[in-house]
Structures are given as structure tokens and as C-alpha cells.
Image (tube, rainbow, N blue to C red):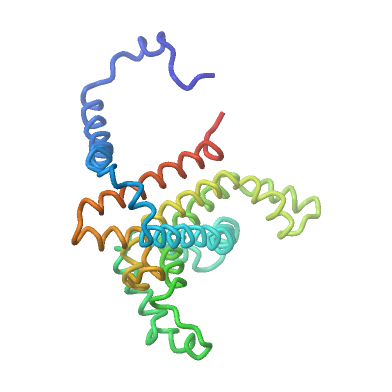
Length: 270
């Protein structure tokens, strides 16, 4: 059945009230107008040349690697955490859920400072890492950690919501048939939560793609090592605004293309 209402239904409901249409139009303009301005103001004559330049290629490569690694980290670490919050009743669960949500509202620079305080050379666990020969700040690994820190809440909350909405009744049925909790997780819980897992992966990837503040604070902005596309755009904006608009357009096109592909593949409903 079509999602659009038929003419009879629209006539019955009447015309949309201006008190709703006007703010909706303003919201749409606020979201669309800057993007249209960016498209119109991009120097397209040099677009392909800039896309093939070494700094852009290195930044795009690092951005793709970091965002991909972030999604993998969210899948491997965030899925068990979401299951724990959704399925296990333990002391301090509410506190843990609140802690998971904190990075959602934490200013990105503060997130970077927190990472430096915890994982920096003189941070809480930095000396222990150094003893093991691990130095994180200002490395590519630091980029992935920063991206994962700010992206994980989007994934965990999405998957936890999917697991809660499916309820525990199927888990109980599986357990009554002799399935272990691990088998139930693999065969019942994960398949039912798959829409939330896919949606959470897209959200985590999108958040990682645009991450800037925590990354530049914890990992720096070194070309070829820690300079992602947002960092390159920020640096370029200081001296060449036209080039910064071109770089922004590259990232915008990449974001729209991948999100459209993911939506067509996973997020559409019949």
C-alpha cells in the first residue's frame, strides 16, 4: 500500500495549518539552504584537480580507514554492551547507561581533553601503556579511538533500543527449549535486533565521518598520519576559503553517496 494518502483522505483531513507549515518550511530552509549555497559556490573547474591532490587523497584515505575501523569497533564492543544494558539486570545499570550517553552531549573538545587525561603519556593509564610499548596520542590509532569514543553511544543506544523493543519473550522461549544464553544471543537476539544494528552502524559511521574536535585534541593534525578531511578543511579554511569549499564539497558528496547506498540497501522498508 502506498505511503502517500489518497486524494479522498487528504480532502477529509483538510489543508495543513499555516502554524505548522511555516515553521516546517523554515526548518527545511535552514537545513537545505547552506547545502545549496555550498554547491553553488564550489569552484567546480578545479574540483577534479583538488580531488586528485596528495593531501586530499591522504585525508580521504585516513577518514575512510578511521570511520570503517570505528564501525568495526562499535560492532565488536558496542553490541555486547547494548545486550548487557538491555538484557541483564545488575546493580549500577542506570549509571552505566547514563555514562554511555554522556559523549552525546559532551563538547568534542572536552571529549578530546578527557581522552588525553586518560590515555595521554602522563594520563591515568598512559604510563602503563608506555611500559607495554604503546603510545597513543598523535597516532593513527588515536584517531580511531577518538572517533570510536564519540560514535559508540549512537550505536549502543540504537541497538539497545532494538533489543528492548523485541522484548525477552523470545529469549525465554529459546531458554525453555534448552538453548544456552550464548546460543540465544546468536540465534535469536541478534537477528531480531538487526535493523537496530544496521541503523546504529550507519549513525556511528556518519558521526565518525564528521568528527573533528576530539580528534584534533587527542591525535593532532599531522598530514598522512592523523589529518582527516574535517581537519584538512579547517586548516585550509584559514588561508584558502575557496579550496576549503571544494574540500567540503568532496566530503559532502561522499557522505550523501554512501548514506544513499546504505539507505537503499538496508534502511528502506517495503
